[in-house]
Image 1 (cartoon, rainbow, N blue to C red):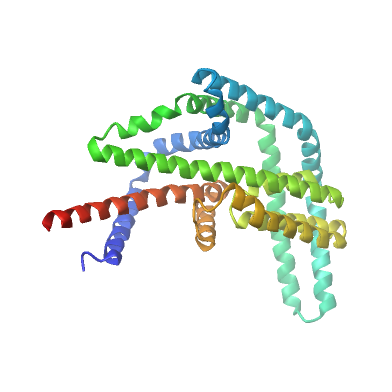
Image 2 (cartoon, rainbow, N blue to C red; image 1 turned 135 degrees about the vertical axis):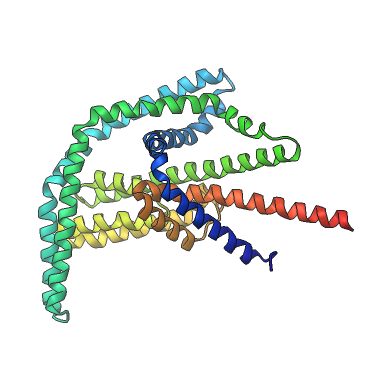
Amino acid sequence: MLNKVWFQLGIGLLLLILIVKNFMEISGLFEPVIIILTTIMIPVLLAGLLFYITEPLQRRLVRYMPKWASALAILGIVAVFIAIMASLILDPLIEEANKFIQNVPMIFQQFEAIVIQFLNDDGTFPIDLEQTFGSVLDSIEDIIIVGSSYLVSFLSGAVSAALTLILVPFFFFFMLKDHEKFAPALYNLFHGERREWVKKLLSEIDFALKSYVQGQVLAAFILAVLLFTGYSLIGLEYALLLALLAFLLNMIPFLGPWLAFFPAFVIALIQDPVLTIWVSLITLAVQQAESNLITPNIMGKKLSVHPLTVITLVLAAGNIAGFIGMIVAIPTYAVLKVIVINIYEKRQNIQKQIFKDVK
């Protein structure tokens, strides 16, 4: 029985629960460490995202210049790109965002009126359902209004946020300059076969993260451009804001596109109910292009993650760590999957070697 996989898995889960329970009891001791880690987590994640996006460019630049020079060149290119994009979209984006924040109460009132009218005309729903739905809409409206006030407060504190973002180019530069030193610093701690195994493991983790980040960002960008083009052609209000929201939400696999569809549908319903048909058709067309053309050609089947696994992980991570958790759930899973597969293969090889020696 001790050799059964499920028995070993059960023991492992029990040990994990005990470790988590004991850690939670003494978590106060680690509070300073946790504060430091949470402070640098976002800059490190953003720097890592930029590193994997620009890594193909750096591989070409290092053929003609030293690595530190290529890192500086990429920093300059990224800065120029951000400046150009800001000059093109920042003013209209801020204008749309301000207009949207001011119109949030009116949008929800109109949406509530449309839904209540639909329920009254249908005549098949009990009155308490209307009241319940209305209270739900009121709650959502309150949440959005409160969220909008937090957004305004956040924008007013942009100076302090800018100081925090100084860490992003700092981490980004050293990732570009010294990334090839990170893996050797780890696997050189080991010797012999174990060293080669750790080296192979780190290489596969790097490949999994690179494949996911580069593919997901490029796919999300293409989808956002397609949606912005479609929304602009049909005259949908807040087209740029909705496209930017779609870009961010499309970082979340499978669920992201449908989360991005809902606000566009609501805006279309309030602006002109006929537009809901066009928004639905545009979303359907873009999703078909994403499923059949964009994702297969950009990302392929490299991660081999089942859709049900993705949805479960994203929902669980969102419940634990919010939007950031939803974004990092799949790459974290991909890393853990690589580690587990390599450990399993290592164990299998050891067992085969033992049986061979016994024979």
